[in-house]
Length: 250
Image (cartoon, rainbow, N blue to C red; front, side):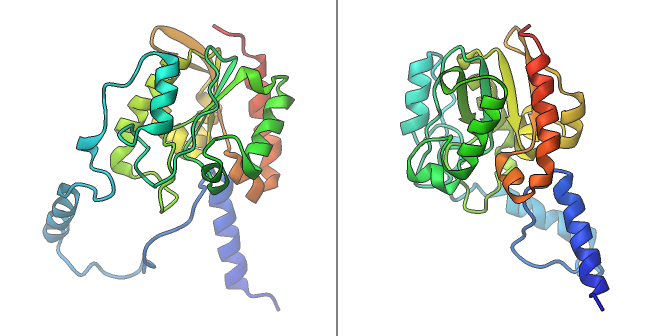
């Protein structure tokens, strides 16, 4: 007989993955039925004490806020300057695929390991799938800019929550400098940080993005890494891409 508990667990995990949760991870296992050992007042004090300490990997105070407004200067800074937001999570940086005034700007969360190896976004398995997605939209590589919220990769494979505001500001700055006609947001983290909405909500609601005096067509969809893990979601992604293809530049 099949293990009923395992079947239920697999079903539960699959549901969350279909909902756009890219990662299921934690430092320690959690006993959801356990009674908290500390009174609420002590728990709050402990959280405040922990969050008051600066991040050891890259203090926010050391990050640049005078970001270049020239396209070439900004691309150079992203590729070389560790003080740019999102560049301090690891030793290696994957530079953007730089296309000014692009027909389409693709924004992901952070590089894959293969992209760090060659120091450039849009490579490896996820890059190949993204290229196929772009071609299906009728675009070629010379028309597509590929950027990220962070161009280095966090060791935890998740962007630190305390950096969300700064990464959002820098993402908007990138969009303003690239000046794309349309915008494609990949994955849950990008959707939440850039639009303030979860991926499944943004997939339904997001049709345009008003920024820097410009109103551009925008769509959020699943990250290629999610599609590689769950190919069943490719049909939904193709529907999202078709919506973006039909939207005129505004």
